[in-house]
Length: 496
Ligand code: AMP
Image (tube, rainbow, N blue to C red; front, side, top):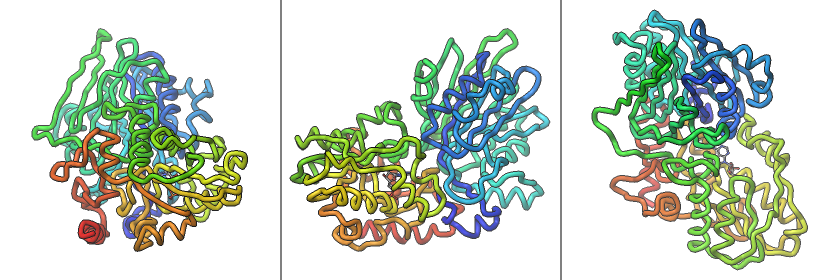
């Protein structure tokens, strides 16, 4: 997420960003811990391309390797993997969009405590991370890094509980927001999901050894079996015993809340071959396109996906509308996700680097462009121009999710409210004129809910968290200075 949510916060934190969407992977009891972790992180690369780290324990000591850049660029080197022996391993791939990028912030973070060493890796964002940090600093704590994951280590160190797992539980129960966390000690691999399960986390198994990871695609890459999702509010503690056997202990929240997974995992973030919350991401995206074709039909000659995010929805749109699907835009796969570049100017440049028009499929045609989402509008603006330059007769945009009015505070990279395209124009037509399209339509919130879960949104108890579309934040936002503005916007939106 963007650091500009709170300039005071970032001034205080030395210009670094706190907010990140990430991938986590952990395995216990397997002799190839680091290799499996590197492969798992490689499958989760879409969740973070900035840096990756792995911590292992070999029975005597902990080993840590952290690198900036892609997993495959570093952890395929046998020399690097040789520095990571061990049968317990956790890893993290990090995504962060702004600010100084320091190796000290790369996770997993490790601390040697009187109960022994502990490493933690975190996907998500705490909404009280700054508040807790200030409290800890006032109490004498010294922070090494600016990532709020370090807050958890300090809370573990201060906990009055005796065992490392009870200390971990004690620490995370003081945190608010969206998080999926892994922790490891000398004998344990611990997995935890926030009380409403905003971020995903699944449990798998390979050769009888437990694995936890952000998405099922990280199980598939190593041929591991999916067991189940870690439940919202649940902590699972796996411990290796002296005889090599593994015990598994699940602790659930005392007062469980209904799960509200983040809808944006289905819209954009998760890999399409993953199964998130028991639902195929690919099928959900295709359904979004089918519902969009029903809600916002258009006469056209060709359906073109904005690759790669828009592809499954474009297929659904094409099948439901009967308009042929063609690859009218070719994506250069050697360029990372557009959002990884830190400034708006470079982001715009990134779009050009990434996509080029396939003139043969576009020239003289009425084109329906299908994308998964519009955030700042950078991609749409560039792509409409590109399609027109390639000779399209008409360009219609269909977006497979509703308009985004509100920033996210749970680990998805979205900018401040005023940078979101939906807040810059008072009408759909004005937005369409800015982008330069012949028409522009978005999927309705019910259309999206049906695509993912089969049912319309239950207004009294929404089945997912959808705050970026509705302003209905599922937790309080303790840290955020602009919370009152966000709430004001939410009221404005609900008043139409
Ligand atoms: P924008 O260009 O700012 O309107 O962003 C929309 C484009 O970026 C779409 O093509 C999406 O596939 C992609 N996108 C949406 N959300 C994110 C995100 N959180 N991080 C990176 N890319 C995103």
